[in-house]
Image (cartoon, rainbow, N blue to C red):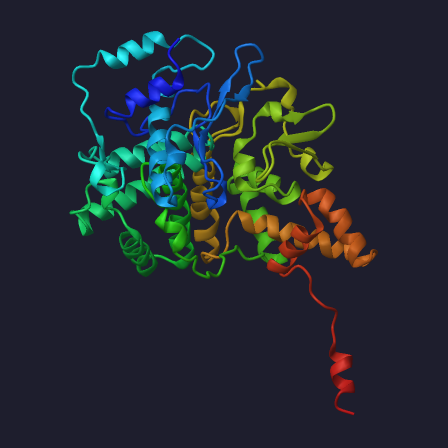
Amino acid sequence: MSTLNELVTFENQNEYESAYDLSIKRNFSPPKIYNANGDLKKRWYIYFSFRDPKSGKLKRITPFYGNANKYKTKEERLSVLVTYRKVLLKLLKQGYNPYADNTELYHQLQAKETVKKTLVLDQKQNNTPKAIEEIPAMTLQEAFDFGLKQKEKIVNSTTKRGYDNRVKKFLEWIQEHRPEVQSIKALNKKVFIAFLNDMLSKTSARNRNNYRADLSSILQVLEDNDIVDLNFIKQIPVLKSIPERNKTYSNQIQEDIFEYLEKKDPILLLYIKFISYNFLRPIEVSRLTVGDINVKDRTIRFKAKNSPLKTKIIPELLWVELPDLAQFNKEAVLFTPEEIGGAWETEINNRRDYFSKRFKKVVKDHFNLGKDYGLYSFRHTYITKLYRALMVDSSPFEAKSKLMLITGHSSMTALEKYLRDIDAELPADYSAMLKNTHG
């Protein structure tokens, strides 16, 4: 059986590959370096875990030391271990298995006639490894495609689409403003700063921060896989931005809108009532299928903003507005452009955007409402109404405790912040106190 030491030693004399494709499900964890917190008196090594064929669980394998601990400076020792780590990662990708006979793999590596040596020992410089032939770096497109491919496996489709769009915009900007930057190794902090400054000048601090966050997330994947040496974007500060929010409707405007939609667009009105009476977000309403509504218990199950699934009661005020859902296909989308409970083959975001545009055309343009008013405004409006109604016969704490059960906020702190943001908490008339100040 060929040992790991033999395989790494042999492969260390040949060209190693960068970790370009880690997309398949692995039976191993990425090799890591243990540097004893820089203590040269202790042994440094490479460690990783491999899936035990008996238990099916990842199990730590005996550390690999090689010749690393012969070197007497941190730089030399780390340089050797970085090389070992890359070689070991390649071997694991090629099929090295610490629980199996690896002789065949060893012979396959020996049989490669076209392999070029990439590292030699420079005896004139303290026997430290010295690169004599650089492996071509990934192009920008290749590197970011790799990062996006990794993200695809751990984020939902909406988040992935956001990454795709921002990476595309960044690469287009590179082509226009920094055409000389072709490889991932040519990227640096100055390039990212220039791009983010351009986004700031054309849009807003909030949008610039969103680009910073998404690009940093992708670049971190590249750093974790040794495709770039450093995630420069983490060194670029987040700018302070004023959050945008929809205004609360006055009682008169809200009533006028509902009365208008009763004749003009009943489907849109019912969509809005799910936001208003059940305090759902537009994206949450857009996800609903007929099967998400429990007719027997009069409850609704939906995917909330920061949790997998939540359940709420459907108040009588909304229940009487619904058709007899027992007659519908449970897989049907609850809200479609033409009917309640039908087929609509499009992504969730497209559904939400459709109703947002429909609301603008049917309602906002008719009532001449500004950009600060939207579908989300109805959620703010009815939470404000409910909170003030609860305050009539309850203390602030009691009112918020009851309200939190209804709105679904995860904590009292989150609810209180939300109420402050929408100006739901207003003081009683303090005229008498002002009069007393005049003596």
